[in-house]
Amino acid sequence: MIEPERTAVIIGGGIAGLTAAASLLRQGWAVTVLEQADRITEVGAGLSITSNGLSALASLGIDSAVRSAGYPLRLAGTMDHRGDWLMRIPRNRSGEPAQEVYGIHRQQLHRLLRKATDGACLVSGAQVSRIYPGDPDGARASVQCSTAHGTRNYEADLVVGADGLRSTLRNQVAPATSARYSGKSAWRGIVQDDSLVSGDFAVIWGPGTEFGAVRISADQVYWYVYTHTAEKTRWPNEKSAAGNYFSGWAAPVPSLIDATTADQVLRHNVYSLAPRLTTYVHGRTVLIGDAAHAMVPTMGQGANSSLEDGVCVGLLIGRAVNAGTPLAIALQRFDAQRRPRTQQIARRSHAAGLLGADVRGRFAVAARNALMKSVPAGPAAAAGAKILSWRVPL
Figure 1: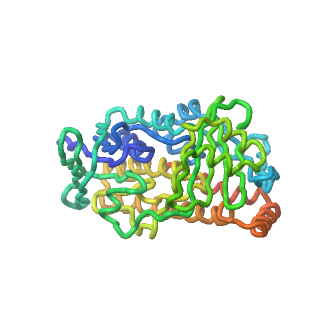
Figure 2: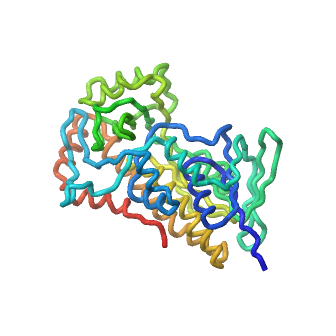
Figure 3: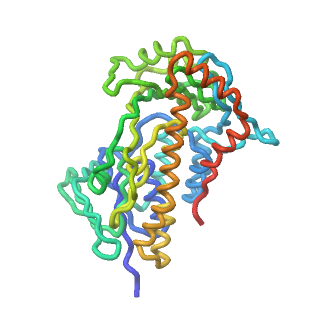
């Protein structure tokens, strides 16, 4: 007797959603991706892929392609806004970086994930209006959405909510958890540059602000700012506002901003989820990525944890069900592995902000900087590396 093909509907065509789609496809599932935007693409600037994210990409067979499309980085440490080192991360005995990290443009990563989803049905302009979670031991799940061609109902063995911070699925199955403003916003920019920034990545802390510049190709640098801002603040010219804010900072910060064209400077408010979800699983549905654990960006793990989530949908759920594990048990195991880890990363990201970008006032900043200079760099780097040591489940 031939087993019927198992089906999954993924809500959201961003990094988390496409990673889950690619991982389920590799397990032989039939996959439909519903994306509300008119085009399935990625907006934004750059990101850094750390070793845990590379492990996830390796399970999809695209880690080499990502390395080729990106730029190798070395985590160098933390500086203050005057250009003085607060902590320098030592190299290992061979002189090589202790952690493998690559800078890449988000659109490049998204393009490679799109290629990995060949075989999936990708539906753009899909406005999801209702989700029936179903029962893992009974009725299938269903998703109702409207497109330019009318309303359609999709039934599936599994529904994956990868629809971001304002997740429709989360709002329906866990409405008590919602987006909470962090008190900060983020400027982001891409600059054409082949000399201002090397492959060494240093976080720069100023009063109430974090700045970073990541080389994402031989001739492009992605820079970002995380700083205190009232939630509804608007500036008519984001580049000018950023340039004025950083005019007194040490090189290369002002030069990077000045060299960025105005159309390449973006700003968005930063949110996290509160309260934290008590489960990522509801019926036959599972939440991943920002829909499950949106976090502040201080550890650079938003995209990396989404890559982890996505491949684990295929490995912990899709592969397990194929091997005969009941869906309910596979979903429980996914939740037991992913929720503690991602919520720990979210907590640590928040704590890193308290030590860094949250600190304001001359005396508080001086005390923070003195503390950072007194902390041994080796043990501190080793502690941070524990998060990055994650590998795909075998």
